[in-house]
Every structure is written in C-alpha cells, then in structure tokens.
Image 1 (cartoon, rainbow, N blue to C red):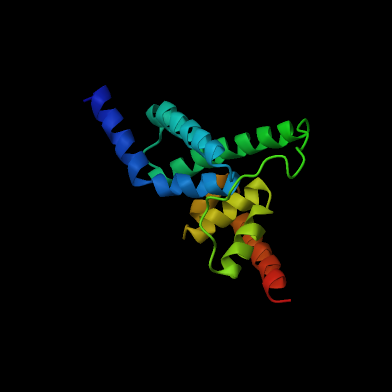
Image 2 (cartoon, rainbow, N blue to C red):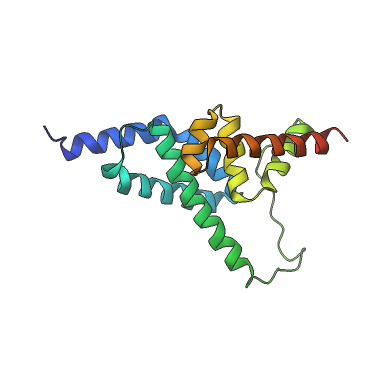
Length: 167
C-alpha cells in the first residue's frame, strides 16, 4: 500500500523536527552569519524534502540527513569562498555592529571552535560526526570515504589538537 502524500509530509516534518540539532550543528560549523545560517537551513530542508522519496530506508535516517546537510553546506561554503574573491572589505570603523552572541565562558571551548573552523570542509564534517558519537563506519558512509581513512584522519586531527593545546 502506498503512503499518502499527507502521511509522507507529516513524517518528513517529524524527522526534521526530531533531528534539527543535527542540522544546526552542521550549519553552525560552516557559517557564522545568522542570516546566512537561516538560508542554509532552508536550503538543507528543501533538499531533504526533495530527496525524501528517493531515501533508502535501509540506511539510518541520521546518516542520510547528515549526508544531505554536509553536501549542501559544503556546496554553499565553496560558493561563498568563490564569491569572496570579488569582495572588497569596508573600512573597519565605517559601521559598528554589536555582537549578539553570548560570551563564551570557557576559553578552551572558544579555542576548540576556532581550531575546528580552520579545517577544510571534509575534516570539519569528520570532526562534527566524531564529536557527535558516530562510529567510524557511520562516518565513512556519510562522507563517502573508507573506514580506515576515517580512523587515520581522526588520529591526525587528534595529534594536531594535542600539539595545539599542549605545547
């Protein structure tokens, strides 16, 4: 028996709501501007809605959602990097904008976030998935790399982290 369109729509909305934190983690790692984050979330949700009919239910829904979120975010990141070639910076004191983000109380968390932000898109995705508690096999499926490659990359990142935080 085929699912009705309304049932499918309700299921997709439930899944997005249930896993919205997964989407926010990915988006927050690829852009810091609030308006850009909102646009990116909308773009990810659009791709989730569009691709749900083709979703292979043999795969965990979180694996699929991570894959969609990372693919859209990485594409967005590449477009932004490409556009930045043509951006001319404004003088520093021309406009004053107050920072609305809460002040980070732990300096180590601030340093860790900056460290993660310095990564290329693949390693950034890998760290997010790893810190989220995903297995090497799950990370490999999401990123389309081998399990051994996941382990190697994680070990290299850990070594970089030790050097950075334990000089």
